[in-house]
Image (cartoon, rainbow, N blue to C red; front, side, top):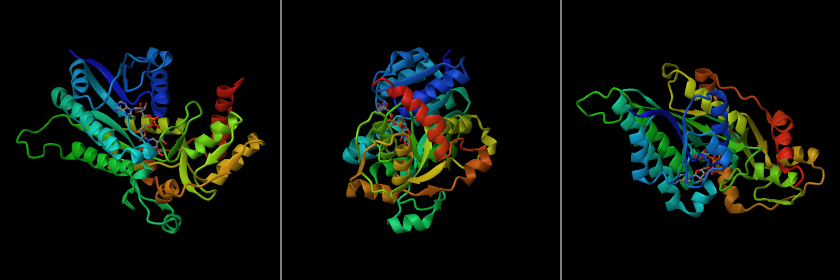
Length: 341
Ligand code: NAD
Ligand code: SER
């Protein structure tokens, strides 16, 4: 008999770090199986039932997982983020799309074998949107899930396509098979805004300028910000992002009419970041040196999103607004992290 467990891919990443410890705290009985191409720290390993250094593109590894475990939920976090995927688009497509397909197939196979649905949590992104100009972006305001979906980056296109794949596995998988399937992949995606963690530094993303500015100031290092002061994006603390994943996971399927949900917390400019950081670190040096190419990507992502569906259907509510995020979550943890360094 297979062992009941939850699977977390990309567990060594920013969300993975927070998710593993929150799951361990909230559901200590849970067997967490974690995969990443990079080794997890000793601390992370201790919180998991099994950790695997491996590639989600390795189908032999995915088959081995299917043979040993019976996953009730799959948190599929492994991905190549937007800036890196723009530099290496073929790699981005392979990991972000082919990797996701491997995991969806794993879920579908398990659901078929057990007759029970397998929940599949997918962190999509505001990169799935594509607004043509900064004027259109500012005029659009809070964008709904079905609007402005002409993504302009490899990463955004990959996310949008994987949302569609998830919708297919959820509702239409093998729809012309004469036999009715008893279990299916219960796909649930959140289009996350830029995430800010106090304990990890982001890498490879386009929204990284916000968190990078804070981490550099806390270390007393100058920071060259690659977007102009006016650049506006929605952001959220990692704590709220993890709350959202867990809340969506625990919502009964009957309450959900969508497979993809926006969630929002605060929408701020790069200047807003600078000002709030400056209050705590008056000597912080931030040079606004926009990179017009990376700026174009930020300009194509919405300034804010409409999260009515998430609030209505699964009770999404953020805990941290911008000020509280800094005062109560980010600054205390960042200070502890860099104390004495
Ligand atoms: P991250 O880059 O910190 O983590 C991704 C992890 O995936 C890394 O540890 C990496 O080693 C691993 N990985 C990459 N390729 C792999 C492969 N082939 N096989 C196994 N592991 C692989 O990113 P994150 O911020 O933790 O993001 C997690 C997920 O959330 C991603 O899907 C990302 O697109 C999504 N997301 C993140 C943000 C954000 O602002 N951080 C916003 C929206 C969506
Ligand atoms: N924050 C992510 C990035 O910038 C978007 O999902 O890549």
